[in-house]
Length: 245
Image (cartoon, rainbow, N blue to C red; front, side):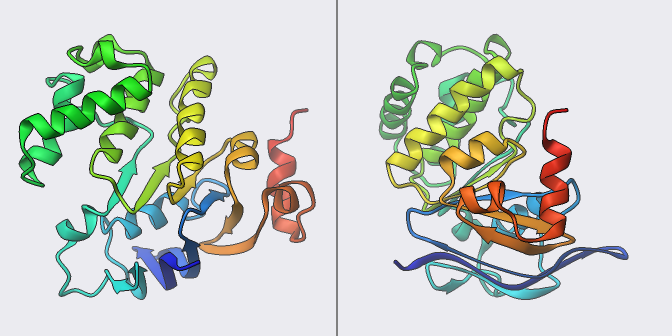
């Protein structure tokens, strides 16, 4: 399978802190990769670098073979091909659900309002929130807001979807509805990279789990190998800390 995403020698430094230290990652088409690791290991920073929200200090990132971290590249054109969802939803509180979803397609991608609206309503129907189209975000539960945020990222049919701890701000009973949507996207063949602290989620959704430590991928492999039989001592230590007492 061809690579949708290829990160080569990616390095990112904030002040004197090396957050990504020559990291390499390749993601094949239709593959779901889960990034795990302690806070500060570089998971979220890697996603922000892929979406060109952070500049690299060294290395390269390619999307479908195109060198997207070349300074001559227009980042807005690249971001049209990448959807990203953050843990804090980032919905505009003064816009309805429908307007949140159609804002970028109409304003940025110059699609007709009727076309964008039709697609948005179709996506909302698929996730069971069609009746919330005219509601404002503060009238939705956290799980509903996060599903709307994911739909907003999907409305432009991205080649790659990045999910940054999308369940960490949710009450436990709301996590399941978001995970169900991501499972559906996996079944549809969406290529995804997700940073998560939900090991059960990583086990059931990811094709590959990557353990990040000090800005590098220290260990990677199928979920059952990395989560049940990790080779590296640091991976073992991290997973032991997560295990219930």
